[in-house]
Length: 123
Image (cartoon, one colour):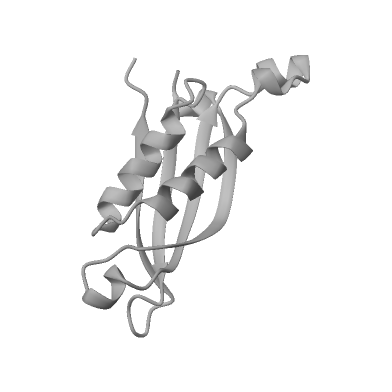
């Protein structure tokens, strides 16, 4: 299925405190990590049944992302964004995910710096 044929579940501006970075102060002081995700799936089964069992449970996925950020201490944003994509794709109803991880205030004169990736399920 092409992403054009799929619906989108949006998770916007998820803010979590965690350890990330290569500088000594970043290794000891938690900082804000901002996550945005678009989960590509077919929502028609859930719409038809009106049953959460047929839906991608975005609350469950969000809780798993928060737990992952709070427990992990990656050096690079590149690693964290890849790991969070894997968290989203662990639900087999999610076919593709576009996800970004940002570090607000990491660069002087910039509101934020981050990385956005798109990953798809390997069938």
